[in-house]
Image 1 (cartoon, rainbow, N blue to C red):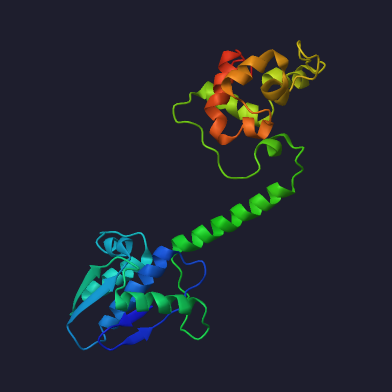
Image 2 (image 1 turned 30 degrees about the vertical axis):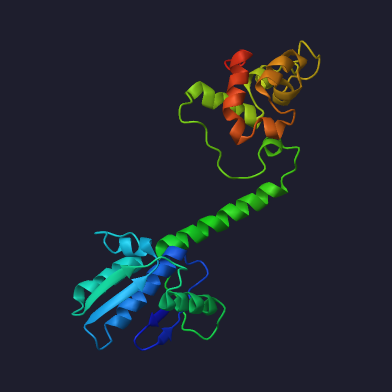
Length: 252
């Protein structure tokens, strides 16, 4: 929304839903600059509460296409156009009025619609749709899946930057439930290994949350008896401690 104070004029535009807030604020400045070129006064002040948008106009090679278009107009114009930042929601009449009509424009079908969407916004929209489709697919996988029982979302989990390769391998194999210790029998075609202490199938879940041999270590480290909680992203360092103390880290 553009509010021309001295003419008390309100101009509203409707943007596609995938437009980011930054791009929407850029569009407001862009339309304001275009309008300023058509007004009679030579000295024009454009007031905005978007500091990030105003600062982007100072960049030599902005990534946002709308910012570049605004800069092109400012270079060519014969008007003296200046900008001022004001904080939002502080009772400045013109700014509050623009905010009000901007909200109304989002629910109106009568305002001119701008269909040009910056490339970054399109890419982000596509990325979000892909991530949503991936998550929906992941949701359809049975909870009996080893990794699904540990990781409910497709969101990327990060490991501490100070981890070495051995630690990265260990935490990954622990979470996917496949390791040399528990699954090498598939290659050697031997019987599945049995826990020496509990006399049950040796699995990652058994080692991390069930085996009585490591009960004291789990208690000392306060490791949850729930496998999903025990191997959660925020428990990464604790699990590595567990594997180090039990001398299992090099066996995985």
